Image (cartoon, rainbow, N blue to C red):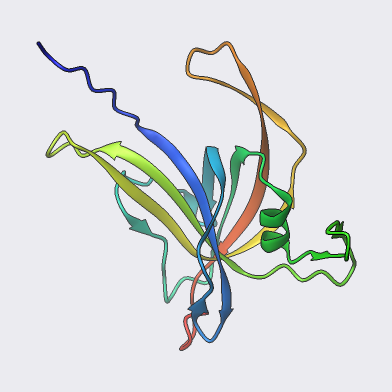
Length: 167
């Protein structure tokens, strides 16, 4: 009797970690399950191979812009991403003085290694990003093309780590 194995190639989790200063990062946290990610450098489109990749350049003064789509996240995670404060009742306070921290953006994915035929996890890492505002809900469909899920979209600009502190 043979066993059937289903390979799950594609995007998994969107994760982030705040840059705390002097080249250090805070704790990595999961934002949500991803639905899509796109990126484009100031020099042109980026084509990235499957596997671990770090977008890093000491000499580049350009930047990479992109968007990431994901299923809705909770308020606590949103507050971490955007630096929102909460009042005593636990509600988010949106204010003019909110300061969005720089983040490391980590896109977790899975792909089949062509050399071994084994499915492996990989990570696409942008070590320093500035985030835009989160969009309203967008629609996506499942793998069968028939069910619609609500998702959000978030724009980002990734920058090179370009000083002695790597910040």
